[in-house]
Length: 259
Ligand SMILES: Nc1ncnc2c1ncn2[C@@H]1O[C@H](COP(=O)(O)OP(=O)(O)OP(=O)(O)O)[C@@H](O)[C@H]1O
Image (cartoon, rainbow, N blue to C red; front, top):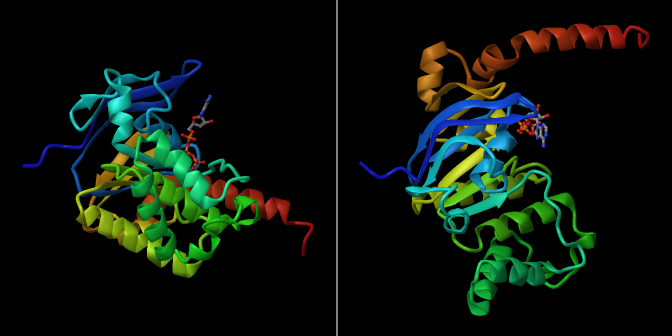
């Protein structure tokens, strides 16, 4: 049996006494693609910020590659690549300048940074923009740059928060393939999203989060067998049915003058 790469034990987080994450228990193995799913406000981003070492105040235990993030945050951060959902980019820089900056923070040699950046820019059809300031870039182009920056240091764990937002169909295919290929090479992918069809296609295991609690997890097949429904229906049943009804009623009221 492989050693787990991530172990969460009773991981909890509160803000002003309000519980946001409630005793999460999760064990993840190298090469797994985890689809981390939940409605807005469920606590997905809070979980990944803890995983990425950005939130250090929490209860419970988090081990990355056997090391407690509380004991050695720097060692843990070196193993993690994080692509946030709404990331700020230094727009005055070109992609190459940005990669030199990010790679430098990770202590990579210039030559390694240039080789990896050049190859990924080529794979993402961005070679022509390698030396163009990013303030003119589309949302999708920026997202590609952020993803490359997240993997430049060859992390064992890649955390992607809504990675496909703003990407066109071709880019989605490339990113999906990238995720699969990284997992084949033993990397662990922690993929947060509410876009069911993509998660269904790429994930080995789906973890459903609702109001800070893991309410179901398993492979797509296991979840389907369990409920006999598609993941989207299951997700709706498990997390959103009552909200959805309220929302439909509210929308009908809001639209009553629009006939
Ligand atoms: N710094 C903070 N202070 C107080 N409350 C916070 C803070 N950060 C997050 N929260 C609250 O924690 C809850 C979970 O937020 P989080 O961003 O983790 O959810 P999410 O599942 O990522 O949602 P989304 O899909 O909308 O990104 C929300 O109710 C949010 O208001």
